[in-house]
Image 1 (cartoon, helix red, strand yellow):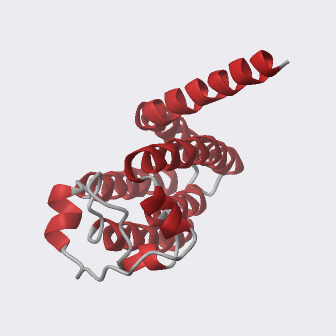
Image 2 (cartoon, helix red, strand yellow):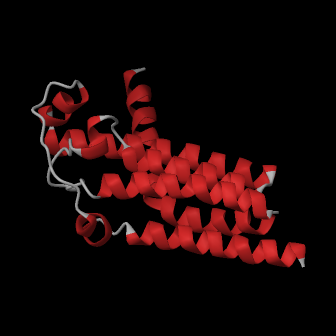
Length: 185
């Protein structure tokens, strides 16, 4: 019985790791399907873009404080939540769903985000616990010493490569704007 649980746990861990590793390529496939299904309007695009920009600003704020792989980051939005980059991504996803103005696009976005973000969070937390041990547990329990680090746009855009997410958002809005123009022509 114990061996069955161990084997099942190991299979779950392997699946989570695979999903976490494949979330970006899966995201591109999902994005193509979402854009194909989208029926944006000027209004949905404006509202969805505004929501998505808020999400990207959260991501930039988080990335401007993150020292990936070096420490358990505790400054900026990390003082308030464990995974602000994923929270920002979720807000961007809500904006994309609104901008697409199509239930099928929204359903695909929600499904993709739910599956991949949950897998990424589990994978990341396991890695953080392995890398930082009690330091990570202390952060989770709010018993670690605070580290105040100023925001750095260079850290956000260059070191943490947040420019890629920003360019992706610009591409999404641009493609949907072209689609709005074609649909209203």
